[in-house]
Structures are given as structure tokens and as C-alpha cells.
Length: 174
Figure 1 (cartoon, rainbow, N blue to C red):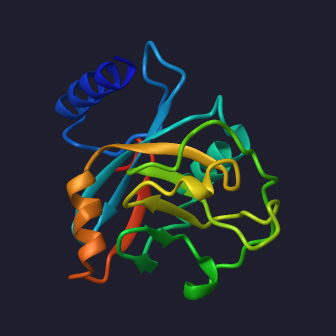
Figure 2 (figure 1 turned 120 degrees about the vertical axis):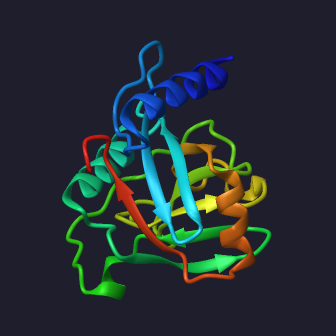
């Protein structure tokens, strides 16, 4: 029910704003949303600050800075996930890490999670979106969002027919 309500609010916001990107609290929920633009289309991601507040704050800060502009999904594993946000690949340095915020979000199709090294507290700007469920990641990686619109775009990324450049935008961007 909560997702249905969020989707209805998203539809109304998109109608009013002409499809501009989102990073705002949706009335009636604790979630926030961002828009991810790719060469295949747009993906709307609902964020869960009550589950992983530091990860949500970090991605929103990087979105506002334009950090992700011009980056690519640099790792696409069909049947598993697409990973993006590696600043080193485009000459953008990162000087922070985010401590693990493991929670009860299952790594199911469409879930957004923090990429990291073998150190659970090594996440920074990289993230991944699940193509399919991967229960072995549950409680091992910090999940902090979910695709609520644009899974068909995620499916196109999985097919790998384009480079999959990405740009994350806050609501107030033009």
C-alpha cells in the first residue's frame, strides 16, 4: 500500500513538474526519491533514510553536487546487478567512507545497495541495483532504496545494448 501511495504521489509530482528529478520527502511517508537518468531512460528510486540514514544522506549530497554526472554503470552482471558511481574512473576523488548500516531490506529485484570492498565499512559513492534477488547479500551490504518506476530501464541496462551513462538529479534541477 505504501508503494502504491508513493507511486501515485510520484505521478502527481511528475505531472506538475514536467518530469524534473526528485530528492524530496513524499508527504505521508518517511521515504525520499531521486531520479537516475541513463542512456536507456529514467529510473526513479525511493530512498529509505530510516533504514540507512548515512547512506541516504551521502548519495543525496553527491547528487546535489553533480558528482554522478557523466559516470557509467561500470559493472553490469546479467542476472545479478548493475554497479555505478566510481568517481576514480572519471577523475573524481572520494575522501570518505560510510560505516555499514545493515538492515532488514532484502536484496530483491530493484533494490539499491552500497557497493564496498571486503571491509563492511568501506562504502562511499558506489552503489548497485539488483536485477534479481540475491539473498546471500542480505545483512551483508547496506541496502537503502528501491526502484519504484523504471524497472524496464534497469532491464535494458542488464541487456547491455548501450554504454549506460548515468546522471542522478535532485528534485530542483532543471
